[in-house]
Image 1 (cartoon, rainbow, N blue to C red):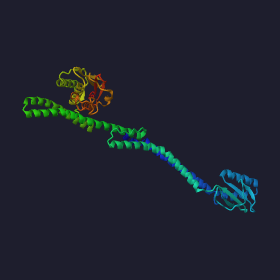
Image 2 (image 1 turned 30 degrees about the vertical axis):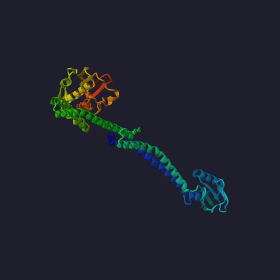
Image 3 (image 1 turned 180 degrees about the vertical axis):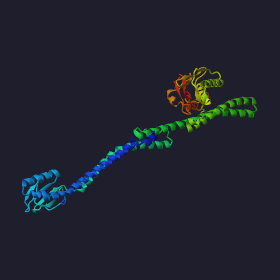
Image 4 (image 1 turned 90 degrees about the vertical axis):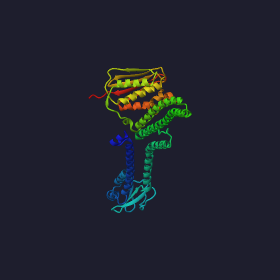
Length: 436
């Protein structure tokens, strides 16, 4: 999903960071423009600027009209925010827009105001009063803008850093061997998706390690009995009791056959874990699912003497394509599982019937059932619902996992329905062969 999104374009996280950066650039540009405008406006009112030339020309024309001069100075104050006083050549005050005009001052700067003189053609003087150009005020304005930008960037930085920090802590704990470590990131977007993917990966890793530990425990348990029998047989042979040794050798042969099947299951599971369903070599040949079910039933009756098996193969089964040997193994695994978790004389039922565009195979038992909390992990390799690992229900927990992979390799699926003390029903759905 993430890879395809990367090929299509950028995701929401990229645009959040990009647009936030653009917004910061815009705000900084506005701040610089505002300070530049303020500095330029102050420079324009300098002695050589356009207003000074305006004072030398326009105001000089009104020196003979005190009322008109007063109106002009008021208009200049309102338009440009500066105060001016006009003095005659003899120092008399002709007009002013300042609340407290003074005699003609010498040009000065400092304090809260600065002033400069503009000489008129008739010898008069215009004294302009304006706010002083204070670089500290511009720097303070820029600093305030930068502080505001820093505060505005904090939520974005936090929204990115917090999930990453949680992922880092969880990854470090997982690397140190704490398989229960989870990031628990609740963010939305790519970071939330990354956190959920990490937690799912950690859960799968924990399940895999737990399954491997269960495998070691199961294999160790399965090896204990045949090794003990071999030891006893050797001791009896060494003591000369050949008759009892022969009896043990017969039991040892049966145990070795079971161990051979165990090793085969372990190797098949290892191949499936590495390469998935592709590790199964599925022959693409016509398959008679009814014949597969009948053969599996015959083998079950031969290997489980005294167990009742109810077989129901409906007519009109659709043609299938696949590997008959693998499908027989699928049915055999489900039947063996039913036999392990149900006690005689309760029967095991095997039925095959057409269903829509394919076929459905069901294996039902009336055994102890499966607890609801175990159902989600039922097809996980090495998982066993019977934690006691009694000899009668031994095994490695690979039978159902292999059955699921075989069904998937044939384009189907397998599911289970059960309740504690109510028995279990496994349902395998297989698609019909495509029309030629």
